[in-house]
Length: 452
Image 1 (cartoon, helix red, strand yellow):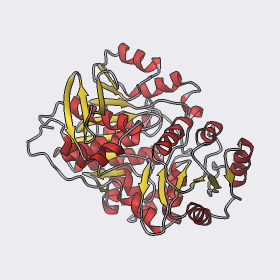
Image 2: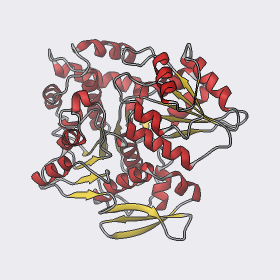
Image 3: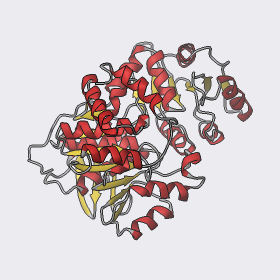
Image 4: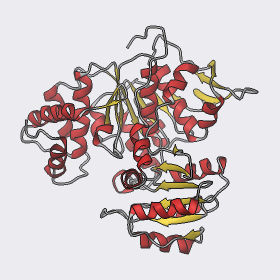
């Protein structure tokens, strides 16, 4: 074995390939073939999209676990620990298991280099095979067509909301980006389309490959039951089920969260299992969530409410603003924000204009990050509220946000995965605990046998 410690493996992987972003399937396919990962793969769900793909992947895995299937989940990036990326039945892969997987991948690659992400995807596939999972749920890292996860042929493909992001690699229009996402489609295999207004390119690709498309709002949906505050109406291909749920559960899934849950449920329904979705399965699955996605953290006492959200483009921040409007608090709303310099930011500031009272710009120690002073200048020019002086550190910025919000207010940490990760590692200890425990093992609640 090249290394015995996980940190050493990860540091080495960061330097192995000459560039961090190198989109192609050639290297990963070659190594996967040597390992036999695609020939002996479990049933595979592949989830692409601009926003919501991490949530849909996590919800899908949780639903399958609640129904009794052994499930592997691969997501990226991580917030606190690399181990978050690879989970089996909700449990993070242990360091020694990751080291064994990396060693297997390293031996199989020979003299061929791999990117950091390719190592992760291949290690996930290796661990899922070793664990004999029934279903592997893979979140696409970037795009779809040339993403390393696309070496597997999806039994069901998923495309969530498509919007402008990562234009440098994916294109400058929704149609171009949609075409990249649609690269995960396989001939005659179903697509669950979780975008109510998908780009034409996605549907054109589906027609070309004779792909059965099931689209949210048309072929499946999840809506409040008429006259029932404790139920949702689930419809899949015209068959309806009333899901009896606790009122607080119903209230927690609205807007994009409901679309994402509906899409995850459509995946499970589309797998043709012998168990029908019911309220108990859905409630069990909702106890697990993707960390940092509209993640509400309540610690009580004199603490404000905290909201962690990795939203980093206009579409995602608009959903954040909708969520905030739907759940007002009596005290001030304080946004602690750090963003990457290559993001379109004007739409973000405008979306939050009426729901944020104070802004606390944060600086991240990353080459891509926009300095806090520049964030402050942009916010001041946009006239979106009171802007605090840039903080000297993330910890100091969060302390100031905490002070401004008070016990009756809310602190919203957003702008990128790196922003939420910094809050979890440098902010109050309960934020790290919340991020670490968001995705958790889900108890099996169905009594019927299911067929993988």
